[in-house]
Length: 160
Image 1: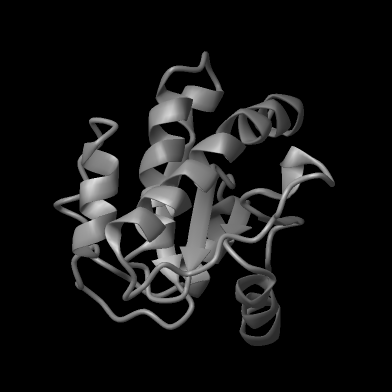
Image 2: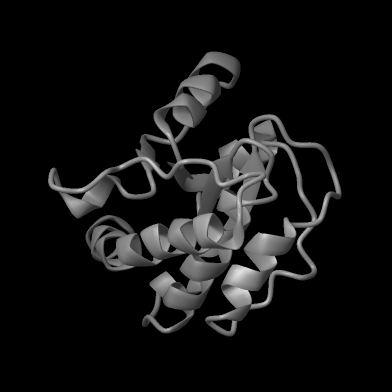
């Protein structure tokens, strides 16, 4: 029997800026939900990531402003094992999803962008703040936080 898919995988390029912030924000939001949503594991990875790099200083600082700790983060690449366990994969840009579809198999049916459920009046991609100033990272985090309610609504419908 197949393992249950009870993981949400947030992905970006290097797993040091966007996907770790998305992971922490989503973990925090899900922890406040009732079962089964508060039982979902959230993990981040990168389509071009190495193992063990810390989150960028500005990512850590952005989350610290909302009392979330990213200081212990260690990067990891997307692996087939993570994909096999994923109920939902959330990319930051369409290119992340395209790369997954090109290089991996057994992808979950739910492959979406983090901001995709906000509706047509919103930008659905979250651009990479890498190498930019703190304001760019703060804006990136705000773009993710803004998407959380739509993700929770989606999960309440889809995750039974």
